[in-house]
Length: 333
Image (cartoon, rainbow, N blue to C red; front, side, top):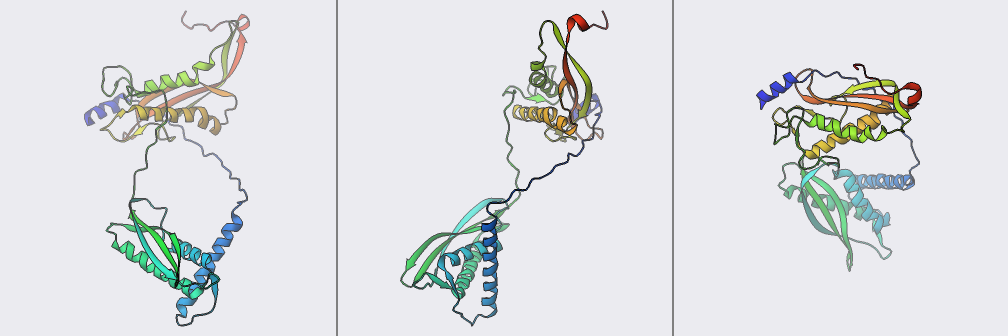
């Protein structure tokens, strides 16, 4: 396959690349309807953090300061997650751990701050023991939640659910989009190398994409009346490939030059997005439409990859009377 890749590189012409300009973006900020609630929650976490520090600094002093049971449980759960959970990592294995701890309360459902901090310390110890029991290579604590609260004669029993896992890197799932290519449309990246399972067909992925994009973006707009014809003025031409925009075919693996039909649809939609939206927005092509699409499989200038070079021509469509301007004239007849 590497010999074939070298042959393909010699057959492909060098790409003419157009540097993409950065588009200025601006963001609009809107008042967050949850700002007050979030601010209050942060303040509550801050307050409980100070209470933990005070109790730890004075373990023998048990003050009469109290807070409601609901606040105490909220503080324990959320301060633990604030401190120890790593929910934004990816975990390929997950374990669940349950543990139950009691906390004393009075008749008014109030909890001493000292006991709330003691509960927090117990939860931390139980969670640490649970995490250490996991045999994961790169273990992490994902989340702590309260599963159940039960009233008992000597206090309140709280069952916690701890979720642990193995942190790992992962390959993001590939979501394919619909398009004109079906299961029989697996093509080698460039003409005339044919289909993946039939190299004798004198076509390729580049040519197939070009045909389908013409049918989608140009053909529907060429109709006119018998007495008029379309002309295109102020034409502009843009050249790009997979090193210029994302979503365009770009392959550094010489062992696999086949593009399966699902990926053909992905590249079709990527090309369409660039042609129909990105370039017109980037270069302010108001009133322009594509009038010519040329796609060729090429090797990059450094020879380290193959990609699809796109040469797209745009123009502003106008209609003229054939009686006045005549029909299109052939240069050779």
